[in-house]
Image (tube, rainbow, N blue to C red):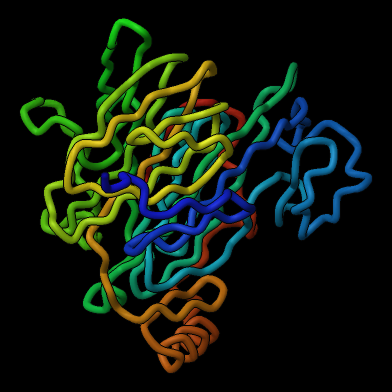
Length: 332
């Protein structure tokens, strides 16, 4: 009998992904209450300001010095998909756009020919903890789209469908960011940005967050494309059985998607991030914030950034925060 599992890799720091994806990172930080500057109201002893990646005290400042997060930095040649599970993110960019999004929201940013943006995590709660959890997935762009105009799109939590099923033993929830498990269902996620690889129906891109209660079973439907690849990032749970094969540790699992594959959960709640798509199948050359097809294109990206800064940074600092209010917004 042919196994449903093609490959299993243990999860490390940055999670390796399959083409057309580039990488996935999972940030979890138990921030304390905030101060008047929306930073942590706690000692910063043990935190290396400007590059705090260790997680002392259960949280990190990352590259922020007052507010945690990622001050202004460039990208070219790919997309970032930020899935926010807990906390608040303030976005600002070199196109003059800004946004604040919260738990359950997704930001899909096409870097294209080049953008500078800041991603800051203001600690708005001054009376208690400010937990933050997010995934950021890098999705590659094909050569024809690497120099498109940069843009971003917000997928607000209430716009994305959640499919719920029960099998008698447990319940399964599937949050659909792109693609849907049942084509007959009238509910559909928002459309991806127009220049995204995911905007091409033949790319067969799907991105789902799957939650299974103890004992739940659910069957992944086949993908629609013959060349499609599918990866399950099993990041929470004790044991997950995939097509009859048990996986007992956090893992990135590539599975066959030409036919249905049964997922059977163990005794604890499990969570899975599913990445799916037809490979772009082009050379990938990465250097820091740039992803192109050749070393010459990478050198040109650095030159262009030095000469143009990818636009006009109109914000008063490189780590802007959008005030004390909790209201989500987008402004262009």
